[in-house]
Length: 231
Image (cartoon, rainbow, N blue to C red; front, side, top):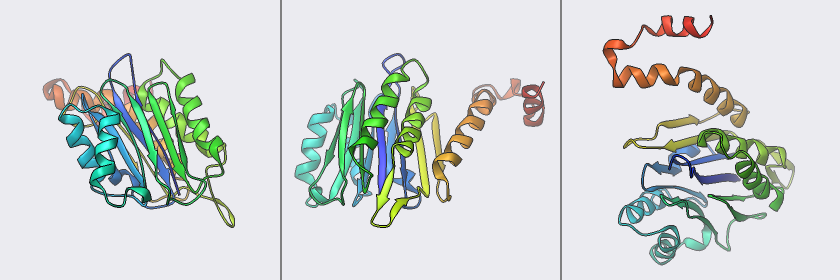
């Protein structure tokens, strides 16, 4: 009951991942590391695949080689879905034979989308299209638009109809040893809507947070910064 997308920005070199699902705290199963790549594990998700994939990418393997190594390494790989993108922008995904239908993936320009228990292939197609047509926007915005498009295309559907997304996450890495955006909604009845609200508010505050750690002496009080935004 999950859909996600990994992506790369050819203009900046940023890598990232966005995911939404009925399960809780889905951000725990995603990784994004600057200069290395981004990865998402879902389906019958493995909590160790993301770390192993990042380790292999750090060794210099490209995305196809990493996926091949994961296939040999994980004895339950047919239960998994994995999407990843490397630091050169090569993106691809895997869907085993065991995830619940509809399950599948689609690769696009600098991105790979995948999902399971979906309304149909139009959901992953919508993610890729939204990512591609938003080229020129910041990577986080492009990934979030892909989630919104997936929801609009039908999202998750079970035997009794549509299934809401109860958690969602967005991670973008560029230049630093940590993600420059690591936003999570761990439990909400409207997780994608909540993630959009969180993202947009964080973007307003991002210059303050950036200056606060890079140049503390020049950083204004937070209430003063917020007041300046309202002028």
